[in-house]
Length: 577
Image (cartoon, rainbow, N blue to C red):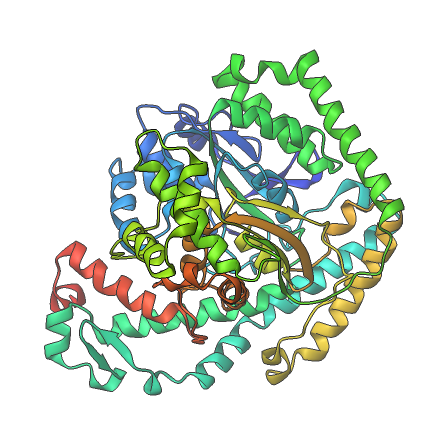
């Protein structure tokens, strides 16, 4: 990153913008709405089409480069880069959200805080890709030798500005300086010689990868070593992200339709965070260059009235909530199932079966009422109901083969408590109903055993004590801005309402071995809570993974290596040349 120049947007030290040469600006101008702001929109041109723009946005996940720099480095010289990327994506990423980057109006917000990104992503009818804390280390510095964190003007202009700067620098220094140490520890705990690798139908150790296996699978010993190193790095960054604050700067790609943009920008313009309002104003300006009629209402009386309505609603509700519910937080369980079908009945699973069975019958009936069909479902034996439900679920060949809409008739309300890092990952499931409380220190944090084992436990606890102290001071006068220094390791609380059909997608995806170990554990607990009341639902969740494997990314990295070989069609000997 230090190879490129950066500046502050219009002199604001909190807003970072990459600088481009005159020649680079000439190449960029046909494809972007500006070259001098951290917020911009993409345009189709002779140099870049929708497929390439979608690939550009998707690349944010695993690169330190900005979108415009990626365009200059990878996409402008190679007009087929977008096609190549999506071919590779089928193997390398396996992330359905990448497909969503093609088709909407594409925009980008670069060098924006994680706190602002959470506000943006709270808008459900949009698609987002942000820089991953698992695959990208946040240890790089800007050319001015500052780490990448947001300098909120209200904090910087307060008497706590110097304390904020000192704390942020300290957090990033601890994060950056311990990546190597944590990686070495994980390697020592998981020596490659002791690991069994699944290669096609064989399970072998690294020293038993024969020439025959290499030729049959297309994977070499160096491929396995690379997969191992990638999984070690991901695991190390998974742990150390507890040091990262919500002020951490990241890059975000957005794809939306006009109506969703208008809704999102109205909400952001009503935000108490000046950063969110700045981003909204810049996005409004950039989209206005492309589709002025779509965002026109934001600046007119209707938009202003709506923004005032949101401000007043949140302010009034917040004031009354403090008056009515000023209690000491009850830490309670990490996962509490608050509501479910049949709650309070002697047999909630029967209530679930009747609800789903009647919905199945309803779709395949000709004119029968729900009342009639519910009565029929109630009169069926349990084996008949379960047999009907099994027929409806069908023979699932993979986790994408989900039940139909009948399963949406069973809803669950969970009250969740976990690390902010977990919330960041699970917030992506936006179709359900999620609502979080402001990030803070009230629910405390846990020090990972790995921190103590590599000798940084005391440093971590000391840094978190500083976070708690600064948060308490800022909260008195800047309650929303006080969220910036909160680290991913502190606990947050949020609720999540979703139906049984969504549970299949959510639980089977988020318990897969390549998932973050923190959210895997929390989602496993959610599945167990459902199993207690509705075993019928879990019975067909055949891709639910209840293991606690340490290097969860490893099998996935090996599969990626094998599939890449299949895509290129090159044998190991050819790739070694």
